[in-house]
Image 1 (cartoon, rainbow, N blue to C red):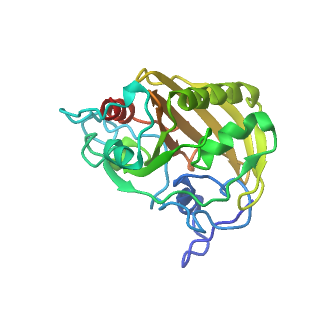
Image 2 (cartoon, rainbow, N blue to C red):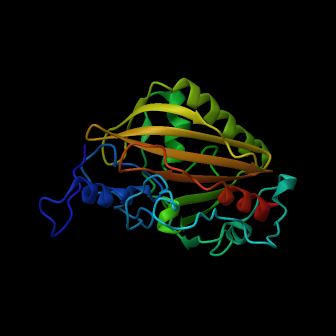
Image 3 (cartoon, rainbow, N blue to C red):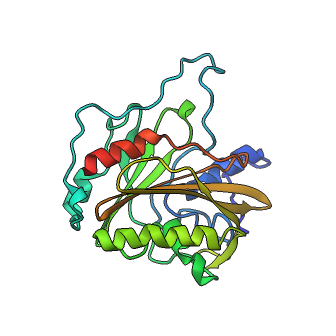
Length: 268
């Protein structure tokens, strides 16, 4: 299990340590649940600056509740016909700042070529997504980090991948099988060190696109649960994968449905 050190903060609280560890959210938890290296090294995507956790109730903080909403007037790129989108089309279709109220979007570099692999073959579709490289291998991928108001909950990583309809359908099918087969957890190697995932469970998906899937993989950080939540939605041959995590208290983090519905609209 890796130890994350925060410069200039000896004896810092668990919250500060986990805030530093939250850097692993940027596309791969590779190493955050095991290993000896710091998260986000060796060219991993841009890390977020703060710890992730479940959404805070704005009413409890004396603030009016305002759910994120898609920007009016979003139009689709025509992905619903099942064709394989090119890189330029993905870059135009992926969520941008202002597409969902209160959220900004920043480009992220792709993940490093070396990721972790589940020791059980049936669980490898799950580690492929954790690595930011869903299988079947995409023809093109666009990576973004989506950050909303702090009170709305954690930052979200998104990758939009072009497979063609057959490959995109296979991607979700393999993941559904893996969620069931790996419910009791699995181990993985090949990242910064061995990782332990203690359980996998389905979550209610957002009803959007041609198909949708949501699930949670629970990692282990020095004996503490780290819920990783994934929401995927398919439009024709393109799959949008949204990923968030909670490094603070073990509760399942919320992911705003408006992100998925806006992305489906932009794919069209």
